[in-house]
Image 1 (tube, rainbow, N blue to C red):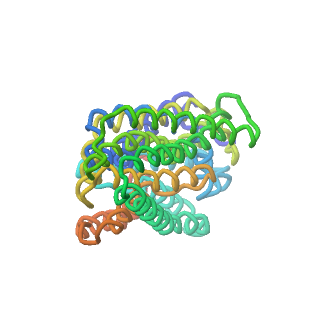
Image 2: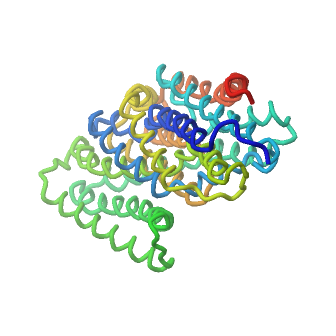
Length: 417
């Protein structure tokens, strides 16, 4: 067996630092997908958004991020190809973390909402290309992931379009707005809470040692969702909302935006933590086994914890730059618009996370925002901003690959591998 270039403990410490850096970049950039619409619609202040995102991004990453982590960690390339080149594999995974964090820091500094999934996929492909050649890349897995970059925004756009249309027809344009708002808004609350509880109970409880039957999960999710829906109903009845005007309806939807923001943050944390700690999980597996690469190693809760903390730190320090881009530059958002986009995005991302399928939250949310813009008026969309965002997506994969190759060469020299 090949001797490690450093002690397993030193290797793990270095990997944790780099993993934290990558998670920091995700928090600084992708958190806009969770909070941009809330801030842009004025439903939440920037400070409130950061606090809510910090809580629910962390919970999503720690409780429900394990399944996607296993997919990104061993789905693109078979780690066993490096069984006789353990040090090369470790250095390569370190390079991917460093490349991902560096690109996200650069993008966040400029306010570009890029895809972190693109970043890590491009980084891993770059590593495999420079070490094993194109034949070692699991191109079928790349195609599977790439197809989601097309389908996820389309699905989210369609859902957002339909959700906002239902809100517009059933509530905003209702003959009795007050009655419609009080009776129907809690139903939207029940739907989004039910979605989040499903993924929490099905995946999150596994990490804390609890396993429930499918019937129990549905039953408990439904009960809790109904309770929260009833609380929302009572709250709306007790408040003096001016439901006779559209402004009054939007004020009521601000309540729903808080729930939607929590849902989106949880969904984002559960899905995108994989982009930071997938390579870290692979390195930790090697360090703990003394140099043996395992293709099905279990992801430690401590690694999920590190990823969650890194995401929260990044969003608190740098997230405001991309939040402004997503919340203000695509289309003018109101609470009802933002709610529709967030719920469509959260549903798409949570379902993908449940299936262990890594998708781009950035693409999904932009699709949702465009969907509500189209439901309102195509003239309300700033297509120049949309095109600029799309262009930043196109360069992310090649940049991730190039950065990885550069850092891989540098790290090999530094570590003498």
